Image (tube, rainbow, N blue to C red; front, side):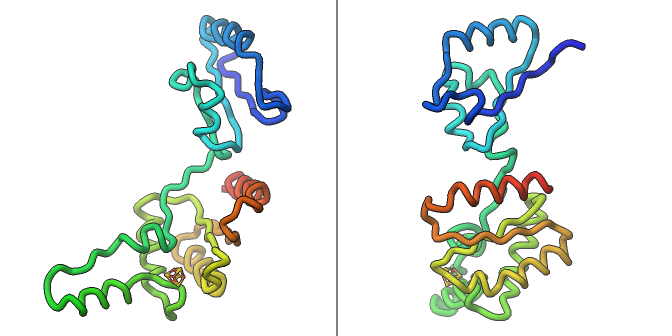
Amino acid sequence: MSVKLIAVDMDGTFLSDQKTYNRERFMAQYRQMKEQGIRFVVASGNQYYQLISFFPELKDQISFVAENGGWVVGYENCTGAKATERCVAEEGDVYDALTDKYLAIGCSCISPNDQRLQLLSQMVEEYQADGVIDVILQACHTYAVESLAIKRHLRQQHDLPYMAIETDYSTADLGQLSTRVAAFIEML
Ligand code: SF4
């Protein structure tokens, strides 16, 4: 059986402890792979842009499976779709228009928060999401209070896997979150 593809992980395998590799030797090996019709794939939990920085001269020729194969198709939180999916009406009374716009934002301080559920359903269908990760920012604890309702909605209405993660948005929990997200993606 002939070899069609070679896939490598990066950290602790392809890369040395200093995050380098022998470029000259690899380029010679890559030329051989090309001649033999073998595809080279980099598969890693690292971000796409970090991965291509290791292969600047080959980035358009080789394939990358980055971020554990996950793809964020939509971001619903307060600086994402929630803030922009509805515009302020340009007709009628300006104060009524502003009030309607801001009361319709699915803010987790509002209960019941049907607007958020509706927007989530809309996004899940539009982007054909395979799963939902609920990002609970410690700066707004009401997200944590609402998370059970979100989980039930996604399970019951869309039969979708759900995971809640809590973060203070610093880089201190990056490794831990990355491991949890990788496990979630693997389960999908
Ligand atoms: S209070 Fe929290 S949920 Fe509401 S808009 Fe602000 S950050 Fe978003």
